[in-house]
Image: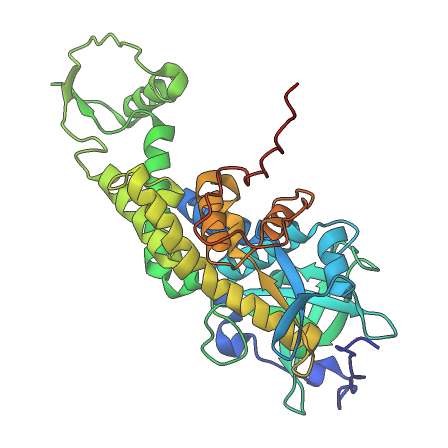
Length: 405
């Protein structure tokens, strides 16, 4: 028996779904920010940087006995991590989806599937748009999940799982049940950024921005005004008509006016909005391409800040959710993400850390070689002598004296 054997769930007291009170409207389900916000490049960059960074981290299932933690290679969840949680998705893709859904909508849901022994056999991701939380008459929380594409059965089929039968990652909640998207909490900042971007796009789409006016001493009738506007729109607007010159006759004059995006502080507004979006997600500006006050030196510090204050809180919540749903409170097993995976692209930092680990007798050379994917070497299971120069090979015994003839 697996240590996280699932108990048989009781059926809801009232089988009629129409009699169940949905808590969606009560807590603003319809008001959750849409992924449309990813049209803002900074929001996309923030969500992607967090989701992809966590998805790329090594993850291991451990078994804890008497305070000693050992890798549980035969755990069913460990097999899903290696082979993929579904037939169509890898583990990094699942975690990336899980985080992105939560960061955009405030909630991410993964349904857990078990075999007859209670071992997890599949982890099925579901879009939050297809999930409806309900409160049963007993007070339990259920999730009504629809499958419009028929990925796991008949298209359009709906089924119910309970809150403890699905991994449910939530952003900060106001009611203890449903997470609230941080985009909805900062709706004013997000809406303002979208409006600034929309205005900016219209300036370039229309091409003939208000940089001057036409004037004439004579009068112009409505039809003439309409023909003039259509002619200007046809011949001088859009990127393909940029830099064309015009010839004016009939007393028409052109007078330039000093209004442009810079003077209207449009660029400054866009710059401020990008910093606002990074602030909402707690992502250091250099990591989303905002280099105004950054250099490669303090960007390295920003990376450490990102790992400590942005990624770590999410990792703790994910690990706790796996313990709650898959392992259970009495199981000796747990899942852990390894933040050392972030140093994979920085060999200098990684090997400097290994050097400290060997000198302080934390890791043996062979343990380090295992982490790097190298085969063990003879004598690599022993710690070097204190003060030994690890850059030099160990001294060899002197050769015995040779007989001279």
